[in-house]
Image (cartoon, rainbow, N blue to C red; front, side, top):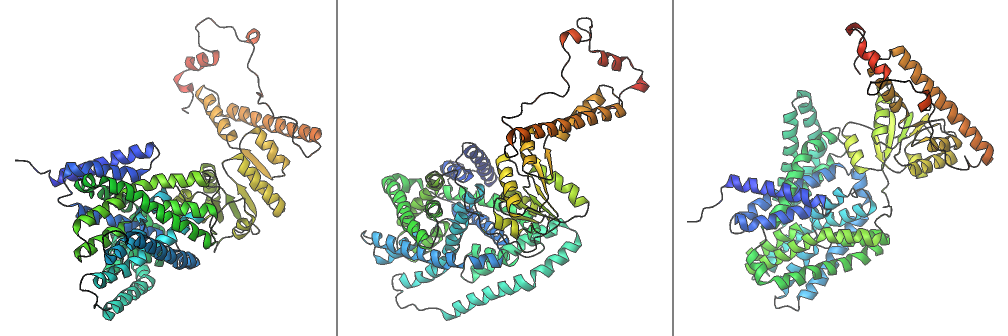
Length: 617
Protein backbone atom coordinates (compact mmCIF):
# COMPACT_ATOMS: atom_id res chain seq x y z
CA UNK A 1 0.00 0.00 0.00
CA UNK A 2 1.36 3.38 -0.99
CA UNK A 3 2.40 5.51 1.97
CA UNK A 4 1.63 9.22 2.21
CA UNK A 5 4.52 11.58 2.86
CA UNK A 6 4.42 12.81 6.47
CA UNK A 7 3.57 16.47 6.96
CA UNK A 8 6.94 17.21 8.55
CA UNK A 9 8.79 15.75 5.57
CA UNK A 10 6.55 17.72 3.19
CA UNK A 11 7.52 20.95 4.95
CA UNK A 12 11.21 20.06 4.78
CA UNK A 13 10.97 19.25 1.08
CA UNK A 14 9.16 22.52 0.35
CA UNK A 15 11.70 24.57 2.31
CA UNK A 16 14.66 22.68 0.86
CA UNK A 17 13.35 22.91 -2.69
CA UNK A 18 12.67 26.62 -2.31
CA UNK A 19 16.14 27.31 -0.91
CA UNK A 20 17.89 25.30 -3.62
CA UNK A 21 15.86 26.58 -6.58
CA UNK A 22 15.76 30.18 -5.32
CA UNK A 23 19.54 30.27 -4.89
CA UNK A 24 20.22 28.60 -8.24
CA UNK A 25 17.87 30.83 -10.25
CA UNK A 26 19.22 33.93 -8.51
CA UNK A 27 22.78 32.94 -9.40
CA UNK A 28 21.95 32.49 -13.09
CA UNK A 29 20.14 35.83 -13.21
CA UNK A 30 16.51 34.68 -13.48
CA UNK A 31 15.46 35.85 -10.00
CA UNK A 32 14.13 34.01 -6.97
CA UNK A 33 10.48 34.25 -8.06
CA UNK A 34 10.97 31.96 -11.04
CA UNK A 35 13.04 29.64 -8.83
CA UNK A 36 10.24 29.28 -6.28
CA UNK A 37 7.74 28.58 -9.07
CA UNK A 38 10.01 25.92 -10.51
CA UNK A 39 10.40 24.31 -7.08
CA UNK A 40 6.62 24.14 -6.69
CA UNK A 41 6.11 22.60 -10.13
CA UNK A 42 8.77 19.93 -9.50
CA UNK A 43 7.55 19.14 -5.97
CA UNK A 44 3.84 19.04 -6.89
CA UNK A 45 3.69 15.48 -8.27
CA UNK A 46 6.13 14.25 -5.61
CA UNK A 47 4.05 15.52 -2.70
CA UNK A 48 0.67 14.80 -4.34
CA UNK A 49 -0.62 18.10 -2.99
CA UNK A 50 -2.75 18.66 -6.06
CA UNK A 51 -5.21 16.17 -4.61
CA UNK A 52 -4.76 17.30 -1.01
CA UNK A 53 -3.79 20.60 0.52
CA UNK A 54 -2.36 23.02 -2.02
CA UNK A 55 -5.14 25.52 -1.27
CA UNK A 56 -4.12 25.65 2.39
CA UNK A 57 -0.49 26.25 1.43
CA UNK A 58 -1.59 28.95 -1.03
CA UNK A 59 -3.64 30.71 1.66
CA UNK A 60 -0.71 30.65 4.08
CA UNK A 61 1.57 31.95 1.36
CA UNK A 62 -0.85 34.83 0.67
CA UNK A 63 0.19 36.22 4.05
CA UNK A 64 3.49 37.03 2.37
CA UNK A 65 1.60 39.34 0.00
CA UNK A 66 -0.13 40.87 3.03
CA UNK A 67 3.18 41.60 4.78
CA UNK A 68 4.68 42.94 1.55
CA UNK A 69 1.82 45.44 1.12
CA UNK A 70 2.15 46.49 4.78
CA UNK A 71 5.86 47.29 4.34
CA UNK A 72 5.17 49.19 1.12
CA UNK A 73 2.50 51.16 2.98
CA UNK A 74 5.03 52.04 5.68
CA UNK A 75 7.26 53.61 3.04
CA UNK A 76 4.41 55.68 1.52
CA UNK A 77 3.37 58.74 3.50
CA UNK A 78 -0.24 59.85 2.94
CA UNK A 79 1.06 62.92 1.09
CA UNK A 80 2.98 60.70 -1.35
CA UNK A 81 -0.07 58.46 -1.82
CA UNK A 82 -2.22 61.51 -2.55
CA UNK A 83 0.28 62.64 -5.18
CA UNK A 84 -0.29 59.30 -6.98
CA UNK A 85 -4.09 59.69 -7.12
CA UNK A 86 -4.08 60.38 -10.87
CA UNK A 87 -2.18 57.18 -11.62
CA UNK A 88 -4.23 55.09 -9.17
CA UNK A 89 -7.77 56.23 -10.00
CA UNK A 90 -7.06 57.35 -13.55
CA UNK A 91 -4.56 54.96 -15.12
CA UNK A 92 -5.51 52.05 -12.84
CA UNK A 93 -9.24 52.40 -13.50
CA UNK A 94 -8.72 52.74 -17.25
CA UNK A 95 -6.47 49.66 -17.32
CA UNK A 96 -9.00 47.43 -15.54
CA UNK A 97 -11.98 48.62 -17.60
CA UNK A 98 -10.34 48.56 -21.04
CA UNK A 99 -8.36 45.35 -20.52
CA UNK A 100 -11.38 43.58 -19.03
CA UNK A 101 -13.60 44.75 -21.89
CA UNK A 102 -11.09 43.69 -24.56
CA UNK A 103 -10.62 40.23 -23.06
CA UNK A 104 -14.37 39.77 -22.53
CA UNK A 105 -15.00 40.65 -26.18
CA UNK A 106 -12.38 38.14 -27.30
CA UNK A 107 -13.78 35.39 -25.05
CA UNK A 108 -17.33 36.03 -26.27
CA UNK A 109 -16.47 34.12 -29.45
CA UNK A 110 -15.88 30.95 -27.40
CA UNK A 111 -18.75 28.70 -26.25
CA UNK A 112 -18.58 29.94 -22.65
CA UNK A 113 -21.60 32.21 -22.33
CA UNK A 114 -21.47 35.94 -21.69
CA UNK A 115 -21.44 35.57 -17.89
CA UNK A 116 -18.37 33.33 -17.88
CA UNK A 117 -16.66 35.50 -20.51
CA UNK A 118 -17.19 38.60 -18.35
CA UNK A 119 -15.82 36.99 -15.17
CA UNK A 120 -12.82 35.47 -16.97
CA UNK A 121 -12.06 38.66 -18.91
CA UNK A 122 -12.02 40.93 -15.86
CA UNK A 123 -10.25 38.27 -13.78
CA UNK A 124 -7.49 38.12 -16.38
CA UNK A 125 -7.29 41.94 -16.32
CA UNK A 126 -5.82 41.78 -12.80
CA UNK A 127 -2.04 41.44 -12.54
CA UNK A 128 0.08 39.84 -9.83
CA UNK A 129 0.93 42.24 -7.03
CA UNK A 130 3.25 39.65 -5.49
CA UNK A 131 5.21 38.95 -8.67
CA UNK A 132 5.54 42.51 -9.91
CA UNK A 133 6.49 44.06 -6.57
CA UNK A 134 9.00 41.30 -5.82
CA UNK A 135 10.69 41.90 -9.18
CA UNK A 136 10.72 45.66 -8.57
CA UNK A 137 12.20 45.21 -5.10
CA UNK A 138 14.90 42.81 -6.30
CA UNK A 139 15.93 45.31 -8.99
CA UNK A 140 15.77 48.28 -6.57
CA UNK A 141 13.28 50.03 -8.90
CA UNK A 142 10.25 50.44 -6.66
CA UNK A 143 11.10 54.09 -5.94
CA UNK A 144 11.51 55.03 -9.61
CA UNK A 145 8.85 56.62 -11.79
CA UNK A 146 8.33 53.31 -13.57
CA UNK A 147 8.06 51.44 -10.26
CA UNK A 148 5.51 53.82 -8.78
CA UNK A 149 3.42 53.81 -11.97
CA UNK A 150 3.31 50.01 -11.85
CA UNK A 151 2.48 50.12 -8.15
CA UNK A 152 -0.40 52.56 -8.75
CA UNK A 153 -1.99 50.23 -11.30
CA UNK A 154 -1.60 47.25 -8.96
CA UNK A 155 -3.12 49.18 -6.07
CA UNK A 156 -6.29 49.95 -8.02
CA UNK A 157 -6.50 46.31 -9.13
CA UNK A 158 -6.49 45.31 -5.46
CA UNK A 159 -9.44 47.65 -4.97
CA UNK A 160 -11.20 46.27 -8.06
CA UNK A 161 -11.41 42.73 -6.67
CA UNK A 162 -14.09 43.92 -4.21
CA UNK A 163 -16.79 44.87 -6.78
CA UNK A 164 -15.83 41.90 -8.96
CA UNK A 165 -16.51 39.46 -6.13
CA UNK A 166 -19.69 41.36 -5.25
CA UNK A 167 -20.93 40.94 -8.83
CA UNK A 168 -20.67 37.13 -8.82
CA UNK A 169 -24.07 36.48 -7.14
CA UNK A 170 -25.70 38.68 -9.79
CA UNK A 171 -23.92 36.86 -12.65
CA UNK A 172 -24.61 33.39 -11.25
CA UNK A 173 -27.42 31.33 -12.84
CA UNK A 174 -30.70 32.46 -11.30
CA UNK A 175 -29.01 35.44 -9.69
CA UNK A 176 -30.32 38.11 -12.01
CA UNK A 177 -32.78 39.33 -9.38
CA UNK A 178 -30.11 39.71 -6.72
CA UNK A 179 -29.75 43.26 -5.49
CA UNK A 180 -27.10 45.22 -3.71
CA UNK A 181 -26.85 44.44 -0.02
CA UNK A 182 -26.91 47.96 1.43
CA UNK A 183 -26.14 46.64 4.88
CA UNK A 184 -23.00 44.86 3.64
CA UNK A 185 -21.84 48.03 1.89
CA UNK A 186 -22.41 50.03 5.07
CA UNK A 187 -20.46 47.48 7.12
CA UNK A 188 -17.58 47.68 4.66
CA UNK A 189 -17.29 51.44 5.00
CA UNK A 190 -17.68 51.21 8.78
CA UNK A 191 -14.80 48.73 8.96
CA UNK A 192 -12.66 51.00 6.79
CA UNK A 193 -13.41 53.94 9.08
CA UNK A 194 -12.60 51.87 12.16
CA UNK A 195 -9.23 50.91 10.69
CA UNK A 196 -8.38 54.53 9.87
CA UNK A 197 -9.33 55.75 13.36
CA UNK A 198 -7.42 52.92 15.05
CA UNK A 199 -4.32 53.62 13.02
CA UNK A 200 -4.43 57.31 13.84
CA UNK A 201 -5.33 57.26 17.54
CA UNK A 202 -4.66 53.81 19.02
CA UNK A 203 -1.64 52.13 17.44
CA UNK A 204 0.99 54.77 18.28
CA UNK A 205 0.08 54.89 22.00
CA UNK A 206 0.03 51.09 22.04
CA UNK A 207 3.55 50.84 20.64
CA UNK A 208 4.77 53.54 23.03
CA UNK A 209 3.63 51.43 25.98
CA UNK A 210 5.14 48.25 24.53
CA UNK A 211 8.44 49.97 23.74
CA UNK A 212 8.75 51.12 27.36
CA UNK A 213 8.51 47.49 28.46
CA UNK A 214 11.85 46.75 26.76
CA UNK A 215 10.71 43.31 25.55
CA UNK A 216 11.68 42.88 21.91
CA UNK A 217 9.59 39.75 21.43
CA UNK A 218 6.52 41.71 22.54
CA UNK A 219 7.20 44.33 19.86
CA UNK A 220 7.53 41.61 17.22
CA UNK A 221 4.27 40.02 18.35
CA UNK A 222 2.54 43.41 18.32
CA UNK A 223 3.76 44.10 14.78
CA UNK A 224 2.36 40.77 13.58
CA UNK A 225 -0.90 41.46 15.42
CA UNK A 226 -1.35 44.87 13.77
CA UNK A 227 -0.78 43.47 10.27
CA UNK A 228 -2.96 40.38 10.66
CA UNK A 229 -5.76 42.22 12.50
CA UNK A 230 -5.90 44.90 9.81
CA UNK A 231 -5.96 42.25 7.09
CA UNK A 232 -8.70 40.25 8.84
CA UNK A 233 -10.85 43.33 9.43
CA UNK A 234 -10.75 44.28 5.76
CA UNK A 235 -11.38 40.68 4.68
CA UNK A 236 -14.50 40.52 6.88
CA UNK A 237 -15.63 43.82 5.35
CA UNK A 238 -15.34 42.42 1.83
CA UNK A 239 -12.01 43.98 0.89
CA UNK A 240 -8.80 42.07 0.20
CA UNK A 241 -6.50 41.27 3.13
CA UNK A 242 -3.60 42.89 1.28
CA UNK A 243 -5.58 46.13 1.02
CA UNK A 244 -6.16 46.16 4.79
CA UNK A 245 -2.47 45.66 5.49
CA UNK A 246 -1.55 48.39 3.02
CA UNK A 247 -3.91 50.91 4.65
CA UNK A 248 -2.47 50.07 8.08
CA UNK A 249 1.04 50.62 6.72
CA UNK A 250 0.15 54.02 5.24
CA UNK A 251 -1.39 55.12 8.54
CA UNK A 252 1.85 54.21 10.32
CA UNK A 253 4.16 55.75 7.69
CA UNK A 254 4.77 58.83 9.86
CA UNK A 255 4.99 56.90 13.12
CA UNK A 256 8.14 56.99 15.24
CA UNK A 257 8.02 53.18 15.24
CA UNK A 258 7.92 52.80 11.45
CA UNK A 259 11.46 51.43 11.10
CA UNK A 260 11.05 49.09 14.07
CA UNK A 261 7.86 47.68 12.56
CA UNK A 262 9.48 47.19 9.18
CA UNK A 263 12.49 45.40 10.69
CA UNK A 264 10.23 43.07 12.68
CA UNK A 265 7.92 42.20 9.77
CA UNK A 266 10.48 41.86 6.97
CA UNK A 267 11.73 38.30 7.79
CA UNK A 268 8.16 36.93 7.87
CA UNK A 269 7.34 38.75 4.64
CA UNK A 270 10.24 37.17 2.76
CA UNK A 271 9.55 33.65 4.02
CA UNK A 272 5.80 33.68 3.40
CA UNK A 273 6.10 35.40 0.03
CA UNK A 274 8.46 32.66 -1.10
CA UNK A 275 5.96 30.08 0.15
CA UNK A 276 3.24 31.79 -1.89
CA UNK A 277 5.22 31.43 -5.11
CA UNK A 278 5.99 27.79 -4.33
CA UNK A 279 2.28 27.19 -3.66
CA UNK A 280 1.39 28.66 -7.06
CA UNK A 281 3.66 26.05 -8.64
CA UNK A 282 2.21 23.32 -6.44
CA UNK A 283 -1.34 24.27 -7.46
CA UNK A 284 -0.81 23.32 -11.09
CA UNK A 285 -2.87 20.26 -12.04
CA UNK A 286 -0.52 18.22 -14.21
CA UNK A 287 -3.44 16.24 -15.67
CA UNK A 288 -5.17 19.39 -16.91
CA UNK A 289 -1.89 20.65 -18.36
CA UNK A 290 -1.25 17.34 -20.13
CA UNK A 291 -4.73 17.26 -21.66
CA UNK A 292 -4.79 20.93 -22.70
CA UNK A 293 -1.13 21.84 -23.04
CA UNK A 294 -1.52 23.45 -26.46
CA UNK A 295 -4.38 25.68 -25.25
CA UNK A 296 -2.33 26.82 -22.25
CA UNK A 297 0.78 27.48 -24.34
CA UNK A 298 -1.26 29.64 -26.73
CA UNK A 299 -3.51 31.34 -24.17
CA UNK A 300 -0.84 32.56 -21.74
CA UNK A 301 1.25 34.51 -24.31
CA UNK A 302 -1.96 35.80 -25.95
CA UNK A 303 -3.17 37.09 -22.58
CA UNK A 304 0.14 38.85 -21.93
CA UNK A 305 0.16 40.37 -25.41
CA UNK A 306 -3.36 41.83 -25.04
CA UNK A 307 -2.64 43.27 -21.57
CA UNK A 308 0.64 44.86 -22.67
CA UNK A 309 -0.97 46.23 -25.85
CA UNK A 310 -3.67 47.97 -23.79
CA UNK A 311 -1.45 49.27 -20.97
CA UNK A 312 1.35 50.72 -23.13
CA UNK A 313 -0.76 53.37 -24.94
CA UNK A 314 -2.69 54.08 -21.73
CA UNK A 315 0.55 55.00 -19.94
CA UNK A 316 1.49 57.32 -22.81
CA UNK A 317 -1.99 58.87 -22.70
CA UNK A 318 -1.55 59.61 -18.99
CA UNK A 319 1.70 61.47 -19.61
CA UNK A 320 4.30 58.80 -18.88
CA UNK A 321 7.49 58.60 -20.93
CA UNK A 322 7.94 55.92 -23.56
CA UNK A 323 10.48 54.15 -21.35
CA UNK A 324 8.14 54.12 -18.34
CA UNK A 325 5.18 53.01 -20.47
CA UNK A 326 7.12 50.15 -22.06
CA UNK A 327 8.53 48.82 -18.82
CA UNK A 328 5.19 49.12 -17.01
CA UNK A 329 3.41 47.23 -19.80
CA UNK A 330 6.00 44.45 -19.75
CA UNK A 331 6.07 43.94 -15.98
CA UNK A 332 2.25 43.77 -15.59
CA UNK A 333 1.09 41.48 -18.43
CA UNK A 334 0.53 38.39 -16.27
CA UNK A 335 -2.56 37.13 -14.52
CA UNK A 336 -2.69 37.72 -10.78
CA UNK A 337 -3.22 35.91 -7.51
CA UNK A 338 -6.66 37.52 -7.12
CA UNK A 339 -7.70 35.71 -10.30
CA UNK A 340 -7.35 32.47 -8.32
CA UNK A 341 -9.81 33.82 -5.75
CA UNK A 342 -12.24 35.12 -8.38
CA UNK A 343 -12.18 31.95 -10.51
CA UNK A 344 -12.62 29.71 -7.47
CA UNK A 345 -15.64 31.74 -6.33
CA UNK A 346 -17.08 31.76 -9.87
CA UNK A 347 -16.72 27.98 -10.08
CA UNK A 348 -18.53 27.60 -6.74
CA UNK A 349 -21.31 29.87 -8.08
CA UNK A 350 -21.69 27.56 -11.13
CA UNK A 351 -20.72 30.28 -13.61
CA UNK A 352 -18.35 27.72 -15.15
CA UNK A 353 -17.27 24.21 -14.15
CA UNK A 354 -14.22 23.11 -12.19
CA UNK A 355 -12.27 21.86 -15.21
CA UNK A 356 -12.42 25.28 -16.84
CA UNK A 357 -11.32 26.75 -13.50
CA UNK A 358 -8.24 24.50 -13.41
CA UNK A 359 -7.43 25.44 -16.99
CA UNK A 360 -7.68 29.16 -16.17
CA UNK A 361 -5.41 28.75 -13.12
CA UNK A 362 -2.84 27.02 -15.34
CA UNK A 363 -2.93 29.90 -17.84
CA UNK A 364 -2.46 32.46 -15.04
CA UNK A 365 0.40 30.47 -13.53
CA UNK A 366 2.22 30.14 -16.85
CA UNK A 367 1.85 33.88 -17.42
CA UNK A 368 3.38 34.46 -13.98
CA UNK A 369 6.28 32.18 -14.86
CA UNK A 370 6.93 34.18 -18.03
CA UNK A 371 6.91 37.55 -16.22
CA UNK A 372 10.64 37.65 -15.29
CA UNK A 373 11.41 37.17 -18.98
CA UNK A 374 9.07 39.97 -20.10
CA UNK A 375 10.50 42.24 -17.39
CA UNK A 376 14.00 41.51 -18.71
CA UNK A 377 12.77 42.24 -22.23
CA UNK A 378 11.41 45.57 -21.00
CA UNK A 379 14.81 46.53 -19.58
CA UNK A 380 16.55 45.67 -22.84
CA UNK A 381 14.05 47.40 -25.14
CA UNK A 382 13.96 50.58 -23.07
CA UNK A 383 17.74 50.71 -22.72
CA UNK A 384 19.16 48.65 -19.86
CA UNK A 385 21.67 51.33 -18.91
CA UNK A 386 19.26 54.24 -19.30
CA UNK A 387 18.85 56.25 -16.12
CA UNK A 388 15.42 55.78 -14.58
CA UNK A 389 13.60 58.98 -13.71
CA UNK A 390 13.63 59.40 -9.95
CA UNK A 391 10.62 60.41 -7.91
CA UNK A 392 10.59 63.66 -6.02
CA UNK A 393 11.54 62.98 -2.42
CA UNK A 394 9.77 64.60 0.49
CA UNK A 395 12.55 66.68 2.06
CA UNK A 396 10.50 67.89 5.02
CA UNK A 397 12.91 68.27 7.94
CA UNK A 398 16.02 68.41 5.75
CA UNK A 399 18.68 71.04 6.34
CA UNK A 400 21.64 70.69 8.71
CA UNK A 401 25.19 71.95 9.27
CA UNK A 402 26.55 69.08 7.17
CA UNK A 403 25.22 67.70 3.89
CA UNK A 404 26.69 64.36 2.79
CA UNK A 405 26.22 63.13 -0.79
CA UNK A 406 26.81 59.38 -1.11
CA UNK A 407 26.49 56.95 1.78
CA UNK A 408 28.58 53.93 0.81
CA UNK A 409 31.24 52.49 3.13
CA UNK A 410 33.47 55.59 3.01
CA UNK A 411 30.60 57.92 3.81
CA UNK A 412 29.29 55.68 6.57
CA UNK A 413 32.62 55.73 8.42
CA UNK A 414 33.00 59.50 8.04
CA UNK A 415 29.45 59.96 9.33
CA UNK A 416 30.29 58.08 12.54
CA UNK A 417 32.99 60.65 13.40
CA UNK A 418 30.70 63.61 12.70
CA UNK A 419 27.68 62.21 14.52
CA UNK A 420 29.83 61.38 17.54
CA UNK A 421 30.72 65.08 17.79
CA UNK A 422 27.04 66.00 18.10
CA UNK A 423 26.52 67.55 14.65
CA UNK A 424 23.32 67.02 12.69
CA UNK A 425 23.72 65.94 9.10
CA UNK A 426 21.52 65.37 6.07
CA UNK A 427 22.44 62.52 3.71
CA UNK A 428 21.58 62.06 0.03
CA UNK A 429 21.92 58.69 -1.67
CA UNK A 430 20.46 57.06 -4.79
CA UNK A 431 20.51 53.45 -3.53
CA UNK A 432 17.11 52.33 -2.28
CA UNK A 433 18.73 49.44 -0.38
CA UNK A 434 21.19 51.72 1.47
CA UNK A 435 18.41 54.17 2.31
CA UNK A 436 16.26 51.36 3.66
CA UNK A 437 19.14 50.02 5.77
CA UNK A 438 20.29 53.43 7.07
CA UNK A 439 16.73 54.51 7.83
CA UNK A 440 16.38 51.69 10.33
CA UNK A 441 19.13 53.28 12.44
CA UNK A 442 17.59 56.74 12.43
CA UNK A 443 19.81 58.48 9.86
CA UNK A 444 18.27 61.55 8.22
CA UNK A 445 18.73 60.11 4.74
CA UNK A 446 16.83 60.95 1.56
CA UNK A 447 16.53 59.43 -1.87
CA UNK A 448 17.96 61.77 -4.49
CA UNK A 449 20.79 62.51 -6.89
CA UNK A 450 23.55 65.01 -6.15
CA UNK A 451 23.58 65.76 -9.88
CA UNK A 452 20.26 67.63 -9.63
CA UNK A 453 20.19 71.27 -8.54
CA UNK A 454 16.61 71.10 -7.24
CA UNK A 455 17.40 68.08 -5.07
CA UNK A 456 20.46 69.80 -3.57
CA UNK A 457 18.43 72.92 -2.82
CA UNK A 458 15.60 70.91 -1.24
CA UNK A 459 18.12 68.97 0.88
CA UNK A 460 19.32 72.24 2.43
CA UNK A 461 22.65 72.88 0.72
CA UNK A 462 22.33 76.64 1.36
CA UNK A 463 22.13 76.04 5.12
CA UNK A 464 25.04 73.61 5.20
CA UNK A 465 28.37 74.84 6.54
CA UNK A 466 30.18 72.10 4.64
CA UNK A 467 29.20 69.57 1.95
CA UNK A 468 30.85 66.15 1.89
CA UNK A 469 30.94 64.41 -1.49
CA UNK A 470 31.51 60.70 -0.81
CA UNK A 471 30.25 59.12 -4.04
CA UNK A 472 31.86 55.97 -5.43
CA UNK A 473 32.64 56.82 -9.05
CA UNK A 474 35.07 59.60 -10.05
CA UNK A 475 32.90 60.75 -12.96
CA UNK A 476 29.86 61.15 -10.68
CA UNK A 477 31.99 62.94 -8.08
CA UNK A 478 33.28 65.35 -10.73
CA UNK A 479 29.74 66.05 -11.93
CA UNK A 480 28.51 66.78 -8.39
CA UNK A 481 31.49 69.05 -7.68
CA UNK A 482 31.07 70.95 -10.96
CA UNK A 483 27.36 71.48 -10.32
CA UNK A 484 27.88 72.74 -6.77
CA UNK A 485 30.78 75.02 -7.75
CA UNK A 486 28.60 76.49 -10.50
CA UNK A 487 25.27 76.83 -8.68
CA UNK A 488 26.38 77.21 -5.05
CA UNK A 489 29.88 78.75 -5.32
CA UNK A 490 30.12 79.73 -1.64
CA UNK A 491 29.82 76.12 -0.51
CA UNK A 492 32.86 74.55 1.13
CA UNK A 493 33.44 71.13 -0.43
CA UNK A 494 35.17 68.19 1.23
CA UNK A 495 35.53 65.45 -1.37
CA UNK A 496 36.50 61.79 -1.44
CA UNK A 497 39.16 61.27 -4.12
CA UNK A 498 39.71 58.11 -6.13
CA UNK A 499 43.46 58.36 -6.86
CA UNK A 500 46.29 60.90 -7.35
CA UNK A 501 45.05 62.09 -10.73
CA UNK A 502 41.58 62.55 -9.31
CA UNK A 503 43.02 64.54 -6.39
CA UNK A 504 44.79 66.88 -8.82
CA UNK A 505 41.57 67.25 -10.81
CA UNK A 506 39.58 68.11 -7.68
CA UNK A 507 42.16 70.69 -6.57
CA UNK A 508 41.90 72.32 -9.96
CA UNK A 509 38.13 72.48 -9.45
CA UNK A 510 38.64 74.47 -6.25
CA UNK A 511 37.46 72.09 -3.52
CA UNK A 512 38.35 73.02 0.05
CA UNK A 513 39.70 69.57 0.92
CA UNK A 514 40.19 66.25 -0.85
CA UNK A 515 41.46 62.93 0.42
CA UNK A 516 42.40 59.84 -1.50
CA UNK A 517 40.32 56.99 -0.16
CA UNK A 518 43.36 54.72 0.36
CA UNK A 519 45.98 57.23 1.58
CA UNK A 520 45.53 57.17 5.35
CA UNK A 521 44.66 53.47 5.48
CA UNK A 522 47.81 52.65 3.47
CA UNK A 523 49.98 54.78 5.77
CA UNK A 524 48.47 53.12 8.83
CA UNK A 525 48.95 49.70 7.23
CA UNK A 526 52.63 50.41 6.55
CA UNK A 527 53.13 51.78 10.06
CA UNK A 528 51.65 48.67 11.68
CA UNK A 529 53.93 46.54 9.53
CA UNK A 530 56.94 48.48 10.85
CA UNK A 531 55.66 47.93 14.39
CA UNK A 532 55.57 44.18 13.76
CA UNK A 533 59.13 44.35 12.45
CA UNK A 534 60.38 45.89 15.70
CA UNK A 535 60.41 49.65 15.09
CA UNK A 536 59.74 51.94 18.03
CA UNK A 537 56.42 53.88 17.98
CA UNK A 538 58.21 57.26 17.83
CA UNK A 539 60.24 56.17 14.82
CA UNK A 540 57.13 54.79 13.09
CA UNK A 541 55.29 58.08 13.59
CA UNK A 542 58.29 59.99 12.26
CA UNK A 543 58.50 57.83 9.11
CA UNK A 544 54.74 57.96 8.42
CA UNK A 545 54.64 61.74 8.91
CA UNK A 546 57.61 62.15 6.58
CA UNK A 547 55.94 60.06 3.84
CA UNK A 548 52.69 61.98 4.28
CA UNK A 549 54.51 65.35 4.10
CA UNK A 550 56.53 64.42 1.02
CA UNK A 551 53.43 63.10 -0.71
CA UNK A 552 51.61 66.39 -0.03
CA UNK A 553 54.59 68.40 -1.31
CA UNK A 554 54.78 66.36 -4.49
CA UNK A 555 51.03 66.72 -5.04
CA UNK A 556 51.32 70.50 -4.64
CA UNK A 557 54.27 70.58 -7.05
CA UNK A 558 52.41 68.49 -9.62
CA UNK A 559 49.43 70.80 -9.29
CA UNK A 560 51.61 73.88 -9.82
CA UNK A 561 53.33 72.36 -12.85
CA UNK A 562 50.00 71.32 -14.33
CA UNK A 563 48.56 74.81 -13.87
CA UNK A 564 51.64 76.36 -15.44
CA UNK A 565 51.54 74.11 -18.48
CA UNK A 566 47.81 74.22 -18.99
CA UNK A 567 47.29 77.91 -18.29
CA UNK A 568 44.96 77.13 -15.43
CA UNK A 569 42.20 75.56 -17.51
CA UNK A 570 43.80 72.14 -17.93
CA UNK A 571 45.41 70.35 -15.04
CA UNK A 572 48.28 68.64 -16.87
CA UNK A 573 49.20 67.63 -20.40
CA UNK A 574 49.02 63.95 -19.44
CA UNK A 575 48.12 61.71 -16.55
CA UNK A 576 50.52 61.58 -13.63
CA UNK A 577 52.38 58.28 -13.47
CA UNK A 578 52.68 56.82 -9.96
CA UNK A 579 56.26 56.79 -8.67
CA UNK A 580 57.69 56.05 -5.23
CA UNK A 581 58.81 58.77 -2.83
CA UNK A 582 61.69 56.55 -1.70
CA UNK A 583 63.09 54.23 -4.33
CA UNK A 584 64.19 50.66 -3.45
CA UNK A 585 67.92 50.17 -3.00
CA UNK A 586 69.81 49.12 -6.08
CA UNK A 587 71.75 45.86 -6.06
CA UNK A 588 75.11 47.65 -5.73
CA UNK A 589 73.88 49.57 -2.68
CA UNK A 590 72.18 46.72 -0.90
CA UNK A 591 73.47 45.35 2.37
CA UNK A 592 75.50 42.23 1.74
CA UNK A 593 74.22 39.23 3.66
CA UNK A 594 74.96 35.52 3.53
CA UNK A 595 72.76 33.61 1.07
CA UNK A 596 69.64 32.35 2.80
CA UNK A 597 70.04 34.66 5.81
CA UNK A 598 67.01 36.74 6.85
CA UNK A 599 67.06 40.54 6.36
CA UNK A 600 69.13 42.38 8.93
CA UNK A 601 66.24 44.13 10.72
CA UNK A 602 64.39 40.81 11.04
CA UNK A 603 67.49 39.16 12.48
CA UNK A 604 67.93 42.04 14.95
CA UNK A 605 64.33 41.74 16.06
CA UNK A 606 64.73 37.99 16.54
CA UNK A 607 67.93 38.45 18.60
CA UNK A 608 66.30 40.79 21.11
CA UNK A 609 65.67 39.79 24.69
CA UNK A 610 62.04 38.93 25.56
CA UNK A 611 61.70 42.24 27.47
CA UNK A 612 62.64 44.12 24.29
CA UNK A 613 60.28 42.24 22.02
CA UNK A 614 58.24 44.32 19.62
CA UNK A 615 54.66 44.89 20.69
CA UNK A 616 51.99 42.96 18.82
CA UNK A 617 50.34 44.59 15.79
